[in-house]
Image 1 (spheres, helix red, strand yellow):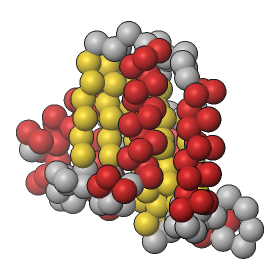
Image 2 (tube, rainbow, N blue to C red):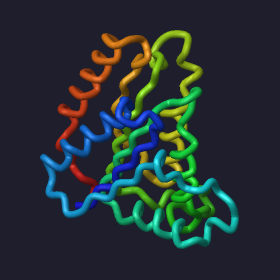
Image 3 (cartoon, rainbow, N blue to C red):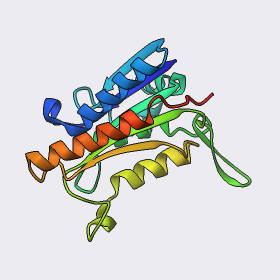
Amino acid sequence: MKILHLDSSIQADTSASRLLSAAVVDRLRATHDTTDLAYRDLAIAPLPHLTLPGLATDLAATVLDEFLGADIVVIGAPMYNFGIATQLKSWFDHILVANRTFRYGESGVEGLAGGKTVIVAISRGGIYSDGPAIPNEHAESHLRAMLGFIGITDAVFVVAEGVAYGPAQREAALQEAQAKIDRLLPLPVAA
């Protein structure tokens, strides 16, 4: 089993999404036979933003092959300014590739990357799952849309929100997210 682990938070060791994505990977490694683990830190080594010439580079091919070769993808995704980090968006720009991860046909878009297990560890400074801020949540919804576009419609989201409301709320949110990780794993790995 091959795991691809991505982090995109700029907050290094203080990042809630990094803590959660690492917890997911640790739990996966403890509950599944892991043959390979690839790690990509998109904040420390960001991918270039999308350009037409950039689609044909060795780096672009490596990033796409890394994704296609993974059985499980774990994504650490903080919400910044109501959306995902530009570093993570750039990674998606490298893997949403026509005729590799999706294609257009007579019936519309067909995702070609289904069959992968994807777990997203998302952190939000505020509360966006309830109350007046719901319409401002564009990170999880954007990730679901991009993953669904390439055929991954059953991604699992582990969310810690309100982490900027103070140490007590942060700790409670992280504990709740960790409990979800413990309940979810081991996951049946898609064939």
